[in-house]
Length: 146
Image (cartoon, rainbow, N blue to C red; front, side):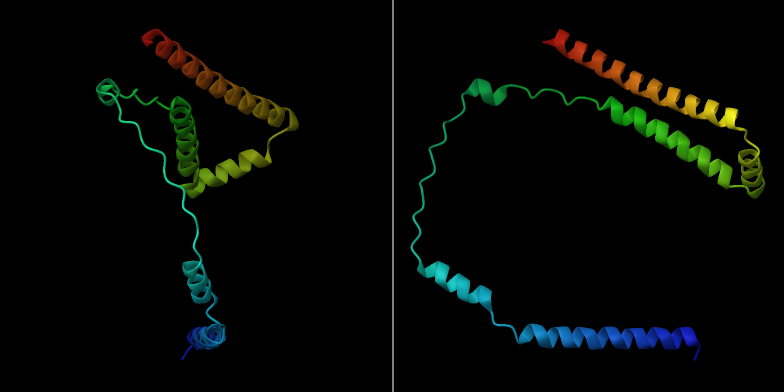
């Protein structure tokens, strides 16, 4: 028998011993919940009557519900994150591309790093602005409809 199998069997045995000890300790505890339930059942608690529910008028019953809003921010951010994931998957899917990327990152100069950080911040601001424009257009369309 290999060492891994022996260790696994020892681990299983330890878990079984711990479960048995836990079950024995739990069985020794008093049943507090049964005592509480009996004392609560014997106590007479006043119950307030529920207020009557008014019947809805026929006009309220047939009024159509408003259409749910499209969550454009979720769609746009989902597309952005999906594009980032696809690019990352493309890079790591080939060892040569991954090595080329590692070499490129190692050879970056400080000025290039600053430029790429500014580019990423600009892209972030662009996506935030796009989401804001979509929300504003959606609210304006909703206001026009009434």
